[in-house]
Length: 170
Image (cartoon, rainbow, N blue to C red; front, side, top):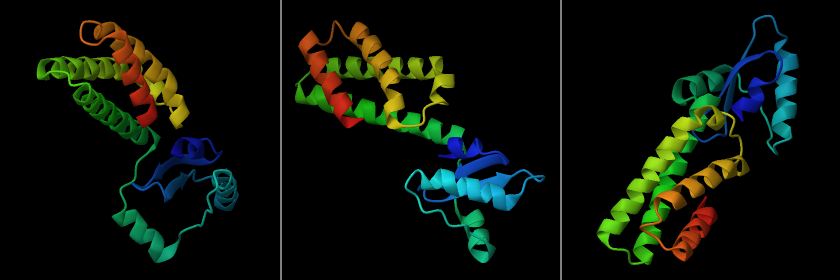
């Protein structure tokens, strides 16, 4: 959401708190704060939110107690969470398939290396990711890379089941 809020004319920078329920916006000094607030309210309302302006002591408390993240930090954390979930899903799948420890280790290592390589390669694309569906091209590239790397570990039908498992979890 901060990425959408940053596009509002007059917004210098926006942040979300950890839960994503609060947004903090810095308005350019020469802008009309009420106009910017109204436009921000419209943007938030389109996302089925009911925006409320926080002022006074409530504002001071939120500024001091919340951990604020800008759009880039949110995307970075999201990528870390996706990687963690991917590796957990692959590990669980490998155990369900009753792969031996060596196979599981190789499979997980391949997945970690491919995810990390892909994340580094497309770091600018990751900054553009805004919704779950925007991750699909990334998963498609990961799928292709993992299929290529794991040919000696998994049969084609196992890889198909693994990818279905990953898609259902992510």
